[in-house]
Length: 320
Ligand SMILES: [Zn+2]
Image (cartoon, rainbow, N blue to C red; front, top):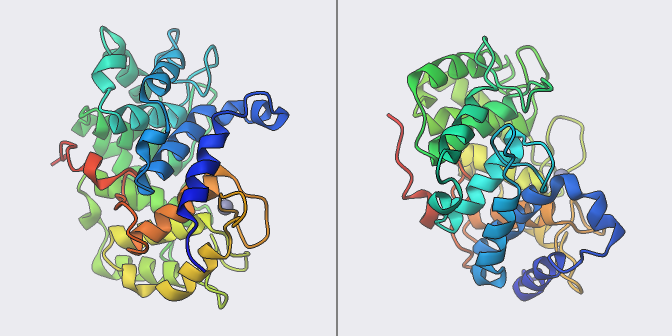
């Protein structure tokens, strides 16, 4: 079976037109993330122009939270680190950061991100205080794209990340928490963004690679931690992690490709978490991103650290 590229493009296009759907409004809190997932999927499919650039930038602008700084998932909601990163990623993809973060907004955006860093170097997602290694990645990725990283922010953040490394080679969401593939990605990605992968020893990286390749199950798909079902989104969290440490070939590409391809809806487009389930934009982007990392189907190359097209990220200023 082949990848139904055109059907996936039509599927993502249709998401933008389903405003009257109950389901659509139910997922309102994910809206800005959803736009980022859809846009990035379209970029991988070389169909970026399917979305209307002007309208999308206007929508991102309308999600600016003027009370706290940063971007909210939807107009008049509260900003959060996750949606702030999505907003910045969309703007960077359209080369429109300066158009939206103008006046004092750039400083306020940086202040919002930095203001969520805690004394131990970790970050909370917003002022309600949930802490997770995801937010360290989110903060460092955002500040890196904006070229606003400093030692005062980076050094404690790295110390926190290293405390989340587990004896089995994985990383957890906080020190002592169980290893999880998504957390491995956020920790390796954060280290890579600030050029600090060498804080891990060769043996530690080897252990991490072993833990990651054990995520592949006999049916070809990858799971997020031992004894769980395979899920297409882990094609991204696991493969990007292996790509970051230069060990992508530790996975059987052929079998993983088959698993992702068999999870697509060949009638209406979109990709689901595993074969025969309902599709969604989240699994569509991460399935496509996984295929792109494996170099299949002439897809546009994706950056394993930022999950954005390489043609965009090659312009980012490197942190040294
Ligand atoms: Zn999933």
